[in-house]
View 1 (cartoon, rainbow, N blue to C red):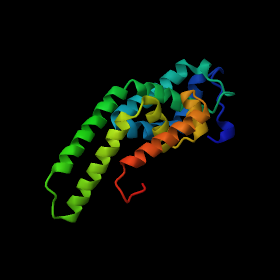
View 2: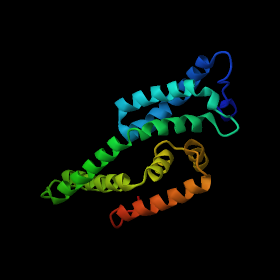
View 3: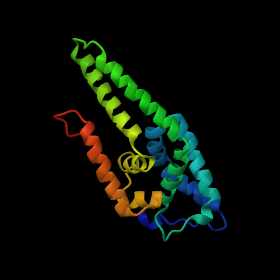
View 4: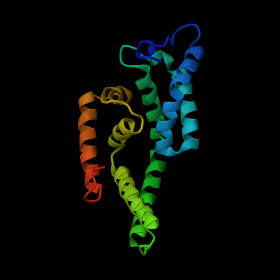
Amino acid sequence: MTEGEDRPDLGGPDPATEIGRLFDSYAIPLHRYLARRIGGEQAHDLVSETFLVALHQRRDYDPGRGAVRSWLFGIATNLLRRHVRQETRRLRATARAEVRAATAEPALDGRVAERVDAAVLAGRLAGALARLSEGDRDVLLLTSWAGLDSNEVADALGIPVGTVRSRLHRVRTGLRATAPEGRDD
């Protein structure tokens, strides 16, 4: 859907058709975002649940408040919050694996050493993500994984755009501190 078409008539005579059109336009980006957060299988379930909630809450959608894309990502993020405990446990387990990988005997093969380095970095980042507050993690991942801009994140989470920008700056600054020296990724 283009920006002008991003104002569905969810209160019209056939809301199921409108939800179907939204599904065709937004299911893939929602799935990509959710899959990066919780894995593909659960993402399928949450995408379906997102559109089911959208159908049931269609009268709550206010086109004057923001684009339907932001509304759908907001619903998906709220559903995702139910799974935050599980996500945090997985990130903490990855962080523990980093400790094991860091203490393992280094291999002579360069490719294996690179994999160990990548695992160590992933563990550090996973640990850092697990330590973020729910709000900070949502802002970072909606921006970096879902590709939403600050205004869309603000709409999705129902917070001021200034709060999104300050959280994003603070989180990125903190994550840079976890990166190994000599890397600016």
